[in-house]
Image (cartoon, rainbow, N blue to C red; front, side, top):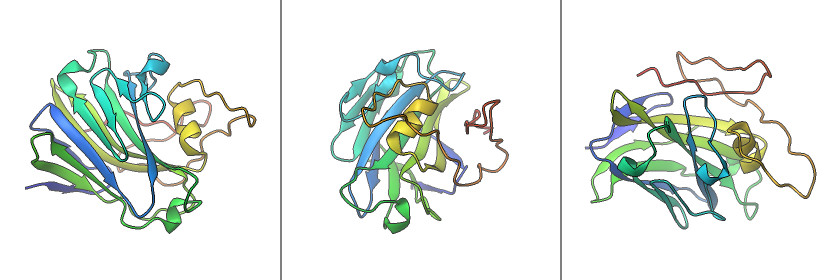
Length: 198
């Protein structure tokens, strides 16, 4: 039976072949960032999104799923951050998005965990969940952290170089409180997710 996660909670993954499926009332751009222990990608190749649908151990399955072969994720990757952002064709913020749900299942079909982000307001992009290593095994953590600066804000915060012909990318905006036991903030004041505690 799938474990229903609240924000900040985690669950073990019983398989290394995993599919993450995101559903909502409006189309979302789904992405994954492979980040090291310092919270940054190694290069832009670690950003899996609509313009680059594959990465090490990760494959985007349009329109709204990602498939993982976690045994193929490089050893220096600490976690995979899964995001969803509004694509501009529907609501302007997540306050008007209904039915947002993340389901993590084994690729053979068994549901492992689910998470329904709630209490969203002015966000245009979200870190939905993280898949992370803990003592040689993989776990999933529900995050639900929002940005008001879209996918570009998330990408920039994790070390991606964003080409934005429309001008400078606004810094990420902290919208909601961190999960219990987590601390926000870096010397620059930008939000940063620490290593999961569980």
